Amino acid sequence: MTPLKSRTVLIKHLIVKFHIISFVICIPLLILSSTVTWAINDIGLYQKGFDKYHISLKTGISSEDLTNVGGEIQQYFNSLEEPLNVTAEIFGEERILFNNREVTHMRDVKKLIHLVYSVMIISGAYVICMITWSCISGPRFRFYIRPTIIIYGCGLTILSVVSLGILSLMGFDEVFVIFHKMSFGNDLWILDPRTDYLIMLFPLGFWFDITMKIAIISVITSLAITAASFCAQIIASAQNKGRKSSK
Image (cartoon, rainbow, N blue to C red):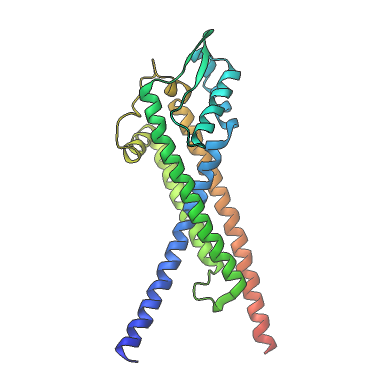
C-alpha cells in the first residue's frame, strides 16, 4: 500500500470514528435537551411547585393568577418579544411583578432556553437522519449506526444524569450556584428572596424538584431506548445468521 493510499485509509477511518463519537454524544444531548424542553413548557410542573411551596400564601397572588403568571413566562420564552412584562394582583393590588434586574435576568434565561431548543433540534435531526439512513442502506453505509452504538449513547446519558443526581443530593445549592456562574456572564441571577418575586415564585426547592424529575425521565427514556436497541440487535443478529445458513 502506497503512503498516499495508506494516509487516505487512515483519514477515512478517523472520519468514521469521529462520526461514531459525535453520534454517541448527541444521544444524551437529545434526551436531556428534550426533557428540559418538556419541563420548561409544562404548566403543570409550575402549578405543582406553586402548591407545594405555598407560593400563593407567601406572595399574596391567587392560585389562578399564579397559573396565568406561569403561562405568560412560558409564552415569553417561546416568543421573540421583549421585555418580559407580567402584571398580577398582589394582596388585592394590581402591579408589575418583576423589577428591572429580574427582567434583564429573564432575558438571559431566554437566550439559554433558545440554545437548549437549538441543541435539541440539531442533535435530533442528526440522530434521526443517521438512524433512518442506516435502516435504509444497511451495513454497507459507511456511517452505519449499529444498535450497540445507540446503547453506548444511552449509557453515557445515564452516567451523566446519575452523576449530576448524586451531586445534587449531596449539595444542590452548590450545584445551583455553579450552574449559574457557568451559564451567565453576570450576577443578575443573585436575587433577594425578601423583595424579588422571581425567586419567591421559584425557590430553590422548586428547582431541585424539577432537576430530579428531569433526571428520572431522562434515565427512564434511556433505559427504554436501550431495551429497544438491544431487541433490534438481537433481531439483526438472527437475520444475519439466517442469511449465512441459507447460503
